Length: 206
Image 1 (cartoon, rainbow, N blue to C red):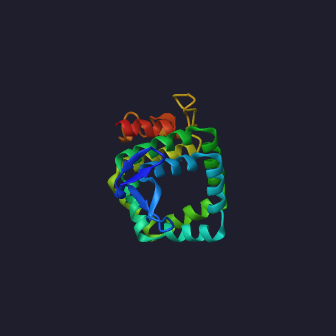
Image 2: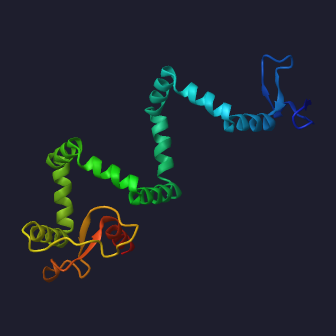
Image 3: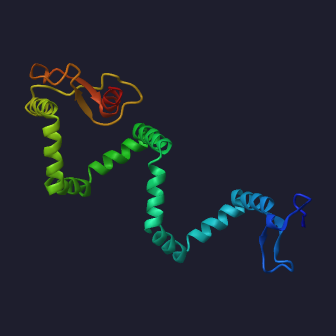
């Protein structure tokens, strides 16, 4: 038995951490009190400051990058991100960020960069990109033909893209045509103009 001055109680030796610097080889406080003290220190201003200084050291940053690439940590991260509650949380955050002014500004800046254009061009010309495009077209032939007809009509001035039909603060992304009456040939140009955010919402609900 050993006395813990923090919680003022006698506890078994197994309730204390090992500490070779102490005469009895055990820490002064019990495990519960030690964890509580460390948690308070991490949340304090000086604790956060010291943590930031430690993580900014080149040696520590290099070690962190090395650990983040290890198979064990990658597997742990994948398992965590595949959890349903984590996926739902990330999807909700992604939607809110995409609708924000900052998200739209960052997206438009990236789309205008030569790096993004070159990356998209390389992917479309790669075997993987071509195979994926062919597979998607074969699986959704009517949708592909309807989109191609709509793109030709807007390109040659037969149709003009209008504002999003919802016109709300949640609007985000490019204006796209929603074939609300289906993808039959008779309705290829019968579309409802929506922003990408609302267009995706309708398809997800369907």
